[in-house]
Image (cartoon, rainbow, N blue to C red; front, side, top):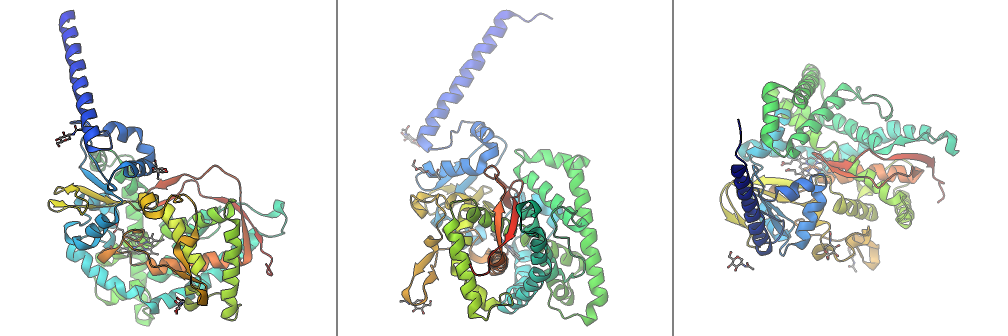
Length: 511
Ligand code: HEM
Ligand SMILES: *[C@@H]1O[C@H](CO)[C@@H](O)[C@H](O)[C@H]1NC(C)=O
Ligand SMILES: *[C@@H]1O[C@H](CO)[C@@H](O)[C@H](O)[C@H]1NC(C)=O
Ligand SMILES: *[C@@H]1O[C@H](CO)[C@@H](O)[C@H](O)[C@H]1NC(C)=O
C-alpha cells in the first residue's frame, strides 16, 4: 500500500495545529487559574509525570506559590484532586463538615484486601462502632499498663542489644547497625504485646537477623498496598489483581500469611481466655463477642496504625541531633532527662508521670514531625458539591487532600525560618517552671489528623517515643555513619529510605 505524501503532510499540519492549540490555551489557563500548568483534556499530567518521584516537594512548591494555600490538580484519567495546606480548610474538612468528607471507596479499595473492614479502612457506622470499642484501649489506665510493657522491653531487650553493640568501647569493636530497623522491630514487638497479648513470640531486635513471618508478611502487604496508591492509573493494579500477577500475587500471599498468623493468635487466645487478665485489646474484643473476621480486621488495623510511624519519627530525631547542627540540643535533652529522672528517684526507668515532664523532648518530637510527618498526606473523597472556606470549589467525587508535609513548610504558618530545626517554637519560658509546651491549633499541625477521626494513639505514640529516646540518650551516644542526606519516602507511612546506619558508645554517666 502506498500512502499519499500530501495526505501525510496534511495530517502532520493538523497535529501541529492541535498541539499548538492545547499548549496555548494551556498557557492561558495557567496564567488565569494559577499553578500547576494545566491543559485541556490532559490536565497537568506532564508536570505530574516529571515530578512523580518528588511529589511531596512538588505539591509543597505549588502550595507555596498559590494564593490561599490550596491547589487543584487535574490530570487525564484521574479524579480532580484538591490539595490544601490552609488550616481553615483543614478544619472544615476534618471537623465542621466531617460527614461530607469520608475516606471514600477509592481509598478503601486500595487497602481493602489487606485491612478488610478494620477501623483504618471504613467509614460511617462501621467506623463509629470500632472507634467506640477501641477507645477503651487508649485511656490513662491503659497508658500506665503500656508504660510497664515499655519498661520491660527496654530493660530486657533494647538496652542489652545496645550494650552489646557498644561492647569494648573502641570504634573497631562497636558493631554498626541500622537504627531504624532496630526501632521498627522494637515498636512492632511492643504493639504486638500490648494489643495482641503475645509475649513469648517476639521478633528478634538484631537488625541483621531475619524477621518473623508475621512481620515480613505485614511489611510486604503494606508495601504492595502503598504501591497501589501511588500507581498513576488505578486500573493497572486492578487488572493485575484480576489475573493474580506480579505484585498483586505477592500481596495475595502476604495477606494470606497475615491472616493465618492473626487467626492462630486469636485461636490460641480463645483457648486460654478463661485465665486471661483481659488487659489486651484482643481479649477484650473476643470477650465482647465480635465475630472472628471482625476481630481479625480490627487487630490488623491497629497493628498497622501503631507500627511504623513512631520508629520513623524517633530515627529522624536521632538524625537531627547527631548529624551536626543540633549538638546543643542533645546536651539540653540529656540534662532534661537526667533532672527529670532525679525527681523520681532515678534508677528504674520512667513512669507515666515522669514522661509528662519531658517538655523539651516533646518539643523536639513535634519539630521532627512538623518537617517529616509520618503521614505526610491524607485524602478524603467528597460526597457532594461544596465550597471550602477559602473559596475553592469542590465537586462530588473529588479527592480532597490535607497535606501536613507542606503545612510544616509554609512561611505563612511557621515564619521564614521554617527550614530550621527549632524546638523552641513549641515552648514558652514561664519563669516558675521553665519550659511549658504551647497550645498549637491542631488544624495547623494535623500530623495526627484532627477532629472526630483524630489518631487514637497520639498520647501512646508520645509515651513510647519519649520512653525510648530518653532511655537511649541517658546511656548511649549515637554516632551516625556518614551517609548522603536521607530520602524521605512516602509509603503508607513515610520513613527514611535505607534506614540509618550508626554505632553506639556508652555515655559518661556524669555528663
Ligand atoms: C507518631 C506516631 C503517629 C502518627 C503521626 C499517627 C498519625 C495518624 C493519622 C494521621 C491518622 C489518620 C489516618 C486516616 O484517617 O487516614 C491516624 C489514625 C489512627 N491511629 Fe495513629 N499515628 C501515630 C501513632 C499511632 C499509634 C502508636 C497508635 C496505636 C496503636 C495509633 C492508632 C491509630 C488508630 C487506631 C487510628 C484510626 C483512627 C480512626 O480512624 O478513627 N496511631 N494516626
Ligand atoms: C480569567 O478568567 C476569567 C473568567 O474565568 C476572565 O474574565 C478573565 O479575563 C481571565 N483573566 C485573564 C488574565 O485572562
Ligand atoms: C516559598 O517561597 C518563598 C519565596 O519565594 C521562599 O523563600 C520559600 O523558601 C518557599 N518555601 C518553600 C517551602 O519552598
Ligand atoms: C507556668 O506554668 C505553670 C504550669 O503550667 C502554671 O501553673 C503557672 O501559673 C505558670 N506561670 C506563669 C507565670 O505563667
